[in-house]
Image 1 (cartoon, rainbow, N blue to C red):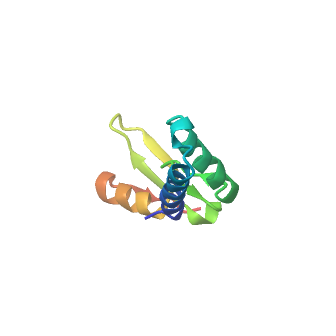
Image 2 (image 1 turned 135 degrees about the vertical axis):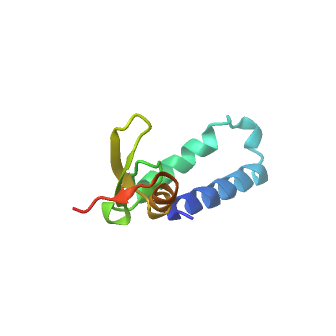
Image 3 (image 1 turned 90 degrees about the horizontal axis):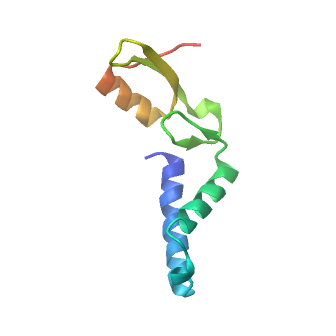
Length: 97
């Protein structure tokens, strides 16, 4: 699993448990905890990849390309897990610098 996604799940769980324990959960809107988690993660993970996952630097990404249904070529920086999924499912290939 992607490091930032593991952290997202852990932070969400911790904040949710804290809000229940402190009895403020009923005061929160549905978007409050996810928004807080996003803000915390942005402090540590500065790069958002094409797959939506976050990394600490560009070195943690894989540049891949693949053909769309209309024949056009799409390329971008993806996390290693998503890049492997695209390689298997869509026939994507790594773009060498």
